[in-house]
Image (tube, rainbow, N blue to C red; front, side, top):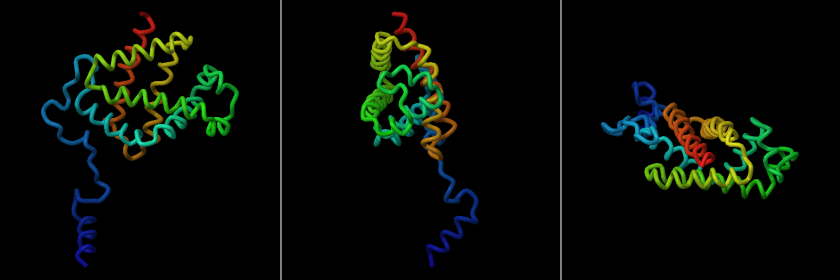
Length: 189
């Protein structure tokens, strides 16, 4: 009976509804929460949102990696032509393609490394320079990274649904600007 009264009280009392969830990045993170890092422009609030959202992706990077590439190829079909092993394949063929599973896993593990080093800028820069070097040597145009950024943000938004927040949107958008900036400088080196 007490549980039933608690549920009813929760419906009636303002601010206690079950659906009223505050995400960590939306709460109080202290006086430094909104101070941007001078190099990345990311605030503590942004980093908290990135960590939280990526922690939801991290447990199954293979599945999310494949789904991301499927979303990317659908949004920008030209990108599928950049991969000899994937060019001309249907979505159904790609879903079970082990090479795509391996590449998607590799890419999402690389993003995991970036997330894990958000507070170690020198390591972050080296990881991104290596990414730029790898892709430049393969003849991938740097403009492909400009196409990729909004696709990744949309993929995360769509995948995470109600776990996505306006702060997460802002954080990942800013992070992708920084990532692309470093990658572009790596192309010019």
